[in-house]
Length: 257
Ligand code: SF4
Image 1 (cartoon, rainbow, N blue to C red):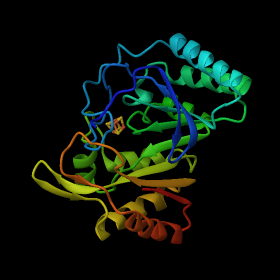
Image 2: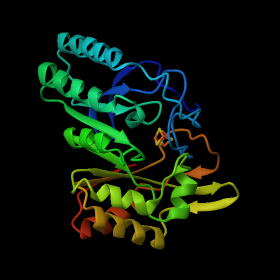
Image 3: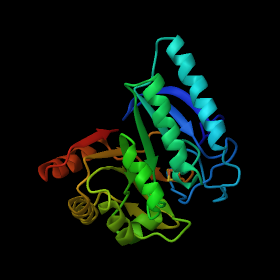
Image 4: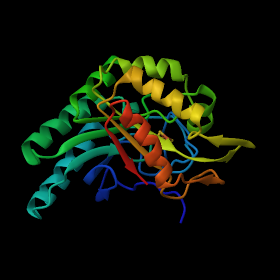
């Protein structure tokens, strides 16, 4: 089994490890991954480009979502959550804010119990309109894979200007209205050992959490094939041990292995 791309704007619903019955919204193109990161663990494979010109229009997204929600309503199986994820970074869509407004209106009309979640790598939160849109959703899930600059660069391989320091400052602007998501892994990449579970890494991560004060923290590890070879899952017991340290500081931590 290799990495894969989602072949439609709306996908699922799928039973998500972290979110429940999740109906996916894929804003990047259906035939290539568009992202501002090139994470070594990305389930969609290596990043093809940062070109947003082939993203579907706001109207295409609205029509596709309405069609699917009406079909699910007919089947009496509405989603627990409508999740923006898919073949890259959703907040890169030039009309991300408007799409969130449409989705919230559709949710209210057709699936009022469903949450709206966005999984984002946080590279676009320097834009006020992206931040404001993320503040309107129910689950604003932002990636912080390491609070150590060199490790973040190895794991996430940002393709645009990005740094841990600026990221933490930007995450603080949410005033706690965010969920931090962290992928823990180890292995070798570009001839270098990588492990974001070491005591130094975990201390830096805890320190970042103290600054950001998220409403929840999600920790997880590799579950599927990765584009980089030589990466290893972190055993669930080790994830739990990391979670215990965060819980001792008052954070609500969800672990999925
Ligand atoms: S941010 Fe998400 S979509 Fe982009 S490379 Fe990383 S895991 Fe893949």
